[in-house]
Length: 351
Image (tube, rainbow, N blue to C red; front, side, top):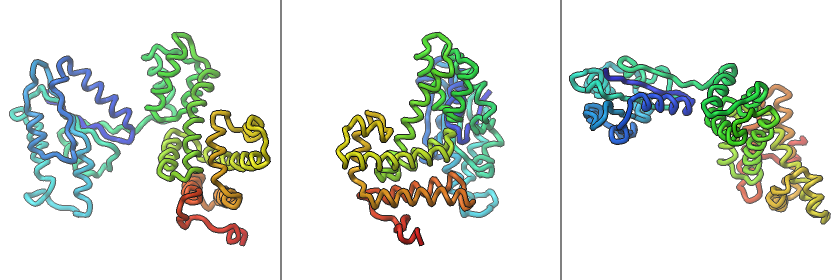
């Protein structure tokens, strides 16, 4: 019997896992019997052509259509509500849905999977195809669902986690399943068949998380706004608290001040690293950034960070909004960047 599936949602990992399960369940010979179609460049006739083909030397054929529902939904924005008819842009796709469900036009050996990201429940293409398809919305895991998922995933990799280690991993990495899967691979290699305890998880995973935070703070101080915003978004999505990230940004500027001061006083390099709290492997990078900043720019950066902190404490902004705004302001302040109108002089702030 023909199977039509829709996999969509914000959790790309769950979508890919569901797609893998579908593929694995179809048996051998799929290499030459799988079509992956770009939904933004597709016609209904092309979908039907691929879906109606008989599998070659295999028991099934898989047709994957990526991004079609979002593409069709965007095309309907601003059109208002219209009756289905010849002038309706979705009508050819309605006809396709009926043909896909017709065993006389599409053989029962075909599986068609529509894959998309986040969609509105009212997306017209989603509503239209839901009539003939089995729909799975992949929303990600809740806080309570994470530990059992981690435990099951670890077991599949031959990894044993102590109970506290499991909780620590969930807390450190958060709900990003791609990141969790990657960390489990590292822990499995590290554990080599033994039980991994909480101290080992904290040592290995915390180092990886700190590297990600360094990437964000380095981008902010260097004025690389696109990289800084992308890194911040990923860290927040992984469950890192905005208050901790704001502290790390402030710490990075504090380190710049220490390094700049100590280098100007010709203090030995090992002592600079110790006093500033900068890892030895990062010292050259931080020193180069500190040399680019004037004392006036560092003072202004401190002022912006103070304003962000006060705006949260006064209830004017939440932690995440304040962090996002000050990140843009600090990037605009970086040496070599055009002033983007975010910052104000120290005099205007004091007034």
